[in-house]
Image 1 (cartoon, rainbow, N blue to C red):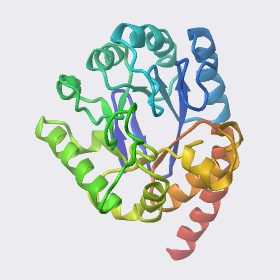
Image 2: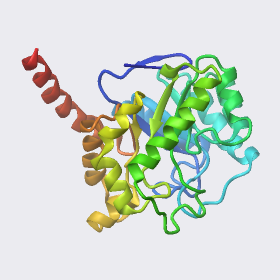
Image 3: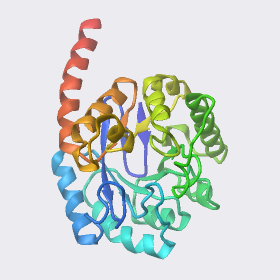
Image 4: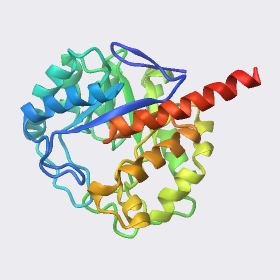
Length: 281
């Protein structure tokens, strides 16, 4: 299984760790910590040292109630960091829903567009279709960050998420985008209550029938705080556990803040899983 991106064909035989770089003043977990370009650039370097295999750089907070920045604000935040990141020899993702930001990032050599709105903004589909090899992650989100957590309801959250992701994938493929450029994200915490998030993890294997690799982000999410009673900066252990479960249930990329701890945990998982595969052959 390979994820084709602008500069890299990412081998997904074993799960990949995507390190989060939020160049924002107001992200739910680390808002303000890397809001200036110099700090964010240093954080990119640190995450690579910790073992990140992909960097995901974003300039818009999508926490519940967050304000949407203007296009100019977002560009000013991310472009200096992206210019540095593309020199580091690893795949670089831009976390954005703005077509203008997508185009500017891809023109710099960025490999992946990671869009929480699944390319639903006007012009976004065209940007991806125009860039012949860029990778893309389509995520499920019900509503917008400002209102998405107001009593979200589903008859069957897994079936509804699967249907949405399949529809968005098919729309993109109809524009001529090859299926091996696309990964799908169920959107943990985006317009979903605790029970919805847990159902998506418990039944995550049902999403594998869509035929695309899954990218999953549980890192420090509020559901983990509800389950453990831990503040956002105390959720490393449960975040690593959630990442491991996501991988066990078929995720090929995990998007995380705590890169070193996740990489270490996956080293053990890979040693056991690799041994099991060898014994079964």
